[in-house]
Image 1: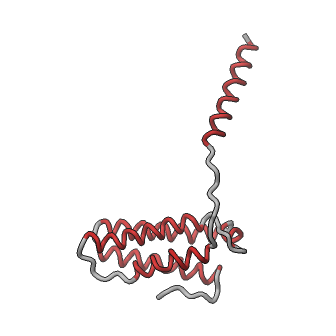
Image 2: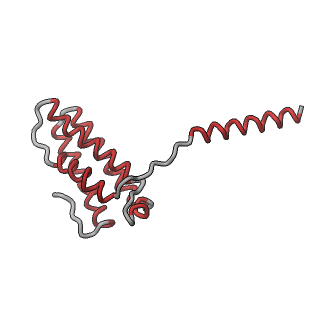
Image 3: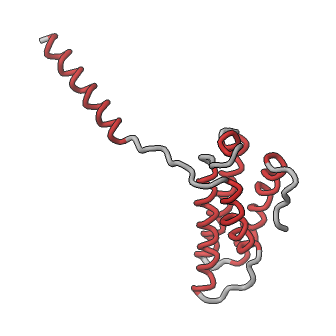
Amino acid sequence: MTRTFVAYGLLLATGLFVACEAQKEEAPVPTMSINDLMVTVVTPATDTLWGIEDPQTNEEWQVYIDAANEIITASETIKIGGTGPEDNERAADPAWQAFADQLISAAQDARRAAENKDLDAMFAAGEVLYPPCEECHIQFHPGVESAE
């Protein structure tokens, strides 16, 4: 009976190991530098949110939803690093991760505000979005100013 129990335990443990291995996803691999991602995605998207005027139609609001989604996706991407010479070192820094999380949170607020067509909440989200951008630039990319 003890052998049966041990054999069953080993079989169960092997099955769990195989199941866990099958569920592991390959880590995402960056395809561009963080700087390129910032220049081509984050800067235009933040400029869009910070430049909000008074959208009236669903299509006009969708522009801001899309910009917020772009910031969320880009911020999730910069958390894993990039192909630039210092990108992976930066991504490993807890401060970098915190700045990216702050961007994600502010962009999620902006997306909710745009989905609710709430202009005041959009302005508030834009104000929350700016400080992590500026502080990250000061710490990790001195000499590059955030858009005002």
